[in-house]
Image (cartoon, rainbow, N blue to C red; front, side, top):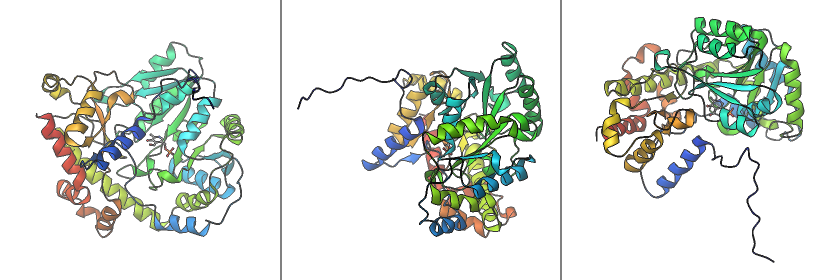
Length: 430
Ligand SMILES: Cc1ncc(COP(=O)(O)O)c(C=O)c1O
């Protein structure tokens, strides 16, 4: 047998692509921890909370289910998902409008394969939209945002962009509460954005995976104002603590049924259908009920407490960012420390994150992974490196009025996050 290996022959669309940034940082942290270093995992955005007990019980009950399910998903689950979004967004979908997949990420990829049009995303956006577009041979346009607008896209920005070629087919992905900034749109902002999207027939993929972990539980959807052009993306990963279960959902307006059907064809030739026991368990999650409402209330209060404590500490130390309104993330910008860092040979976000990790064990994700140029000194900080079971237990008996002293409580809920953030600020001060 010859030892000669097969030369590298990769499709140009994947040649040179690195593994997804978030997964890369997780593996690097695991290596450091294996070598005995204390690691503060502020780079990876997994829910810290356990899957709610009623949902786990449903999974156990259906562990024996072994048959393939219909490509689009289990009928009862599709109905539960449509009902969930109708209730939250005031829209009128039915179970026929829902597509279930193995994670919303996979559904997003299929959408980009199937829909013919450019991908338009705000800068910053979640790490996977643009690489997916590249693999699917789609053009990507990053639209600028500003810190004074909480790093959110403005309707004027979208309008300016679409005006250049008004009839071009476009897919706009809006994610709110946002990864990596924790910002979300107001009702007025959504209304105005909807008007612009409607003017140019833009298909909006509304990535609402963090919707249920809006810190005040008042998430709004652009679908309310632009029902005919919005696909709502959701799933179990963030608000139900079940990222590894891999279940995501897309809810379409009936006017986009052709797109749902085309995606189902692509799904039938790729993933076939989503795990059967997981779909049964997901029915419970989407149907909700008092147990899940209580779980969500406690999760939100814990996240808000920790997010506000980290934010307050960073602002006091001249690390600029919008205070998070939902989800797990803060997007600090280190401009105040630029000169000091330059003297230590740090001029890019990648260098900043690499040196910070090596010298303190604090892991962040560089802003270059979210669409910014190398020299922009920003990063994503996830504040979820804590024991979610314990935090929920503490929160369980507390009334909303008990959540006053944010800084002290955050030390109880998330001691390691607070320690990591202090270490980072000490390091910034040299
Ligand atoms: C903004 C955003 N969208 C989508 C996803 C994908 O979620 P999943 O594929 O687990 O449904 C993630 C996961 O990190 C995310 O942060």
